[in-house]
Amino acid sequence: MIGHNLEEFKREETDFVIALAGASDKVESLAHQVTVTGDERSILSVQGLNVTDDRDLPAVRGVTFDVAAGEILGVAGVDGNGQREMVEAVTGQRQIAEGRVMINGEDATGWSVRDVIDHDVAVITDDRHGEGLILDFNLERNAVLKLFSREPFSRRKLLRFDAIRSFTSQLVEGFHIKTPNTQVEAGKLSGGNQQKLVLARELSQAPVLIVANKPTRGLDIGAAAYVHQKLAEERERGAAILLISADLDELFVLSDRLMVMYNGQSMGVMPITGSQSGEGQPDDGGTRQKTRTGQAGRRALV
Image 1 (cartoon, rainbow, N blue to C red):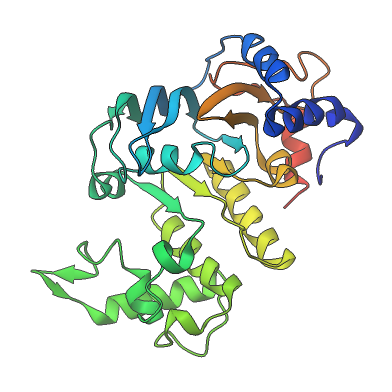
Image 2 (image 1 turned 135 degrees about the vertical axis):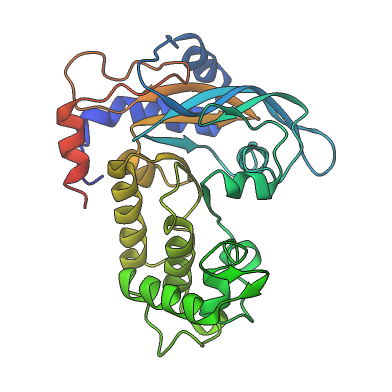
């Protein structure tokens, strides 16, 4: 795990792996070791979240956590433990049965997808083909999928193609997207370049909150490293990032704190720091416990 001492996290990672495997005795111990913290401004606050799945069965059960500005909260867990439903609820794609979601100080519990977009929330999906892009559309149309109604891309309900083309060219150059031109269909790009296009669009508006659901799924090492770099840069800019992944190495490299989900519940939140005091002590989802040593270790990643 780049940027961290493997021995330093041996015990913590073992605990998380046991929790992920569903060993109920260890899961219970993690859940009962939490302590309350909260010194920094919360951008995303989720309180007592309950969500049902497509069969109307409980998928998320009483989940509570916060993500602060300039923090990455990692969410670990085997697929199917409520992560997808939680993401959809937070981003306005799924109805919330019970609980509360606050985004940047506003009650977002009943927000639609458009409301979420209009409040500067970026969503990096794990399904770039089905959700992130329209593969038959060219790069220009994909670049403004969420933005076409805003100036300078439209005026008086008419699209301004010169502005769209210029914007897309800037994204291609800034994110090193390999393409002969911006008129190419997104489906003809490699998987890595498709994900770069999704990243470029989502990060172009300097979002206050980024929800990244398995953002490196299906990518090669180089493309995955690029995604990691961009997420780290966004954290340094001050964005709050909720990172869901099944890759523990990825989570330990990037996260400031780590939450395990099992059977739709949060099993506790563990700070990942390089400090000598308080290492490995879980908290209840409050704001991060970061040290200068921990920051330096992560900066080595990028």
